[in-house]
Amino acid sequence: MTAESVDEPVDTRQRRFHPAWTVALVALIALIGAAGFRAAPGVLMVPLEEEFGWTTAELSLAVSINLLLYGLIAPFAAALMQRFGIRAVTVVALFVIGAGAALSVFVATPGQLILTWGVLIGLGTGSMALVFAATITDTWFATRRGLVSGVLTAGSATGQLIFLPVIAAAAEDVGWRGASLIIAGGALAVAPLVWIFLRNRPSDLGVARYGETAPAVTAAPVPRGTAWGAAKLALTTLREAARTKTFWALAIGFAICGATTNGLIGTHFIPSAHDHGMATTTAAGLLAVVGIFDIVGTVFSGWLTDRVNPRILLAAYYALRGVSLLFLPSLLSAEVQPSIIVFIVIYGLDWVATVPPTIALCREVFGDKGPLVFGWVFAAHQIGAGIASVLAGLVRDHTGQYTVAWFAAAGLCAVAALVSASIRRHAPQVPVGPPIPPRSGD
Image (cartoon, rainbow, N blue to C red; front, side):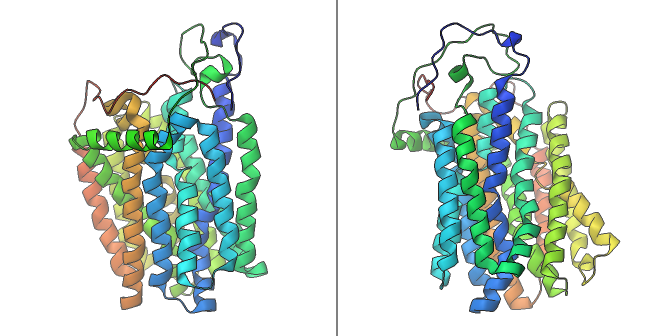
């Protein structure tokens, strides 16, 4: 990819519509397109269990590996985006997701399910994880960062949830294999859009970031480096960030966030509701409603993050989530009652509202390396999700229900609230890792 040449500097103040908003829109569509298969496990666990006779723990293991790779690849993906450009990494990730979804129709053993659901989908979606949203936000926006990160985060999580009723209906009408192919097609369809409209940085178009007052921008040199250099940058960033208490506070809180969203509700809510006699499509519809309210909650959280101490926001979000989980075991039944609707609304508003304040704290403490540090914090999020997914499956296999898992998650949320409230303010930015070499458009 070659940067567009700029004959004359362009004054960003003369533009009525800044191209940063086009990039943000394309990023939003890409995040939604990549979210489809991350919604699949919760819906397809029951059909796979019925067809192959696999246990909940075996299915949860594949989901767990998916969740772990989804998080662990994120910081390396952030470094690769800095070295090779956002557009190239995103397009490759979409193709990997499509390949994993398409190949899953041939699985006949739990090991093959781990390879497709776990490894391929985990690697692809991890490269388009929330660190992608953080990178877009920091690269293209100098102001409105909280709002933009909130919108992109909502797109990622909501895309996952709004696919649920579609996948559930497809699984009933054409089988789980047909549903997997639909997801593969959706991911591949987004790739050309990203290639055509997504740009790596404002200098590719000769503009400043949105909100910057600089009147002129010239194109920067092409970034140079290797995949190993990107990996080394990611690991160096982790080593330096791990020396701060703030990093561990954010990582612990976000690990609990992942355990109580992707790990438990995202993976096990539908099977748990099915245990209580609720139809799979009905339970999937409830999670889709979570997605609807997630849009409101996360965008509003982004707006608040630009105005309120993010530590206070995180503590409040985790506390509210913990209280709602305490009531969940008594709310599930064969029919949709008003009480479960209240839970769905609360959980939707809180689903990933934690992301904008977490990104803001990473930026406050670690400066320009904020997206890379957030990548490692997000890795902790998915480690928590992966562990919770397996443990909840084991709880279900040994007790016949998920009650212990829901109560344990509520207790963890209380811990996250306390840890988040204890994060101290940082006036100076903490230097992390070596400086990034001069970059230029791809």
